[in-house]
Length: 523
Image 1 (spheres, rainbow, N blue to C red):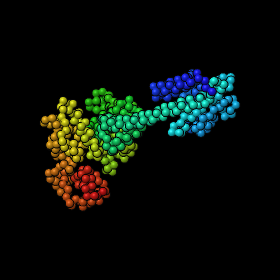
Image 2 (cartoon, rainbow, N blue to C red):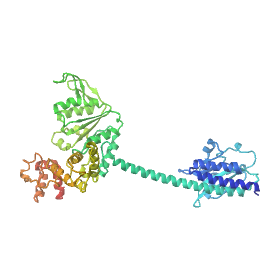
Image 3 (cartoon, rainbow, N blue to C red):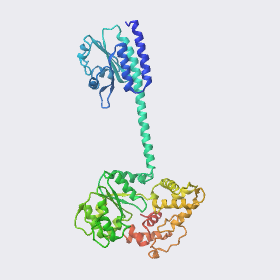
Image 4 (cartoon, helix red, strand yellow):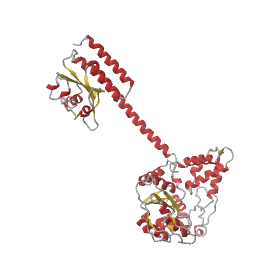
């Protein structure tokens, strides 16, 4: 029977346990505190809470009165020992004498550690929705002035409280993980809308290019960036360099189309003193300057065949010879190239070395044109507006109809052209906002220059195809005639399906040719 003097201790355990569990939802601190109450107030010693492991089996997660090494030994296979039995059956188990019970394993606590007298062991299931999710167990001296029924009753209540604590903790953890995942996705989405390395946009095609660039950044393989002028090839090259193991090294850029041929070799490979008129001192080239980092060769398609041979040697031997020198200088560089030209066509026409093409085209990465990046024009337009508002100390907004008009334009000059249009609009706008009429006026001027998009050049007369070769210097806009399909088919047949060659023959840009093919359902 339970003595009257024991009842206040049981009530005190429950009261204190409620207060402890109510102060915190962290089981690492609350459960051991409750087990301490059981030991100090009612003599249920070495309490432990055993929980399932992900890979199967059970392990002591929380304990009071066990040394760290004893707690670490408390690992059980599924169904093993008294603890495993209680977990499997969901029923209370009382061992009157641990020395007389073969199923008692002494796994966590060695027998000499326990008192000399008869020691009992009580284990109760921790239930959630009537399913066992763990085991609460402890030792007690059998010959005590307290009935086993009272201990079992108390332990059932405490196990229920611990079960609720564990359940709430699990729900909070799952909710926290879900919110962290959501926050990560939101941060990722925000980052995708934020300028990183000068690249802004959320369109699928841009994200695909960014993902591919990130994947290949870690290698030293040569990357060839393909795409129209103004698509951001240099920014992609810088991003690849930044994400590579060479990010602490230099990033050296050289535009092969902007430097005269007779100077490009010296600019790229360097020169010795006296190598040519004006070479008053020895100078290292861009390849040497990029040692340990990345060399970005923009507009590689404009390089002469002679220089292509020397570049091939650089890629094969990883060394350079300065102009006027005969000494091989080793360089450790990664090469990234870019072009808006069709190098395969250049190879076919003998203007680009096939062996160099294969060396450079290890990882081709196509950058989408702005007209292919659905939804990115408004993001870019607002970004450029903020940039130029800040630069010129304006506070302009975009008026009604501006963004739809910008989205409908074909942007032959891509991002660079959009940036120029917004800057011009900021500088020429009257009032506090940029109006659709302002943009229409600027785009009309844009459409009259060079490779204008068909959708926006409305009043430009064009010669027939027969006269197109004469008028193709600037490739002006040409109206589409009903007879065009036959002309297009004939041109493609003559050029054996080579669209670049067919466009040149017809006096069109490749884009203008593709527009007509799409319009008439030709491929």
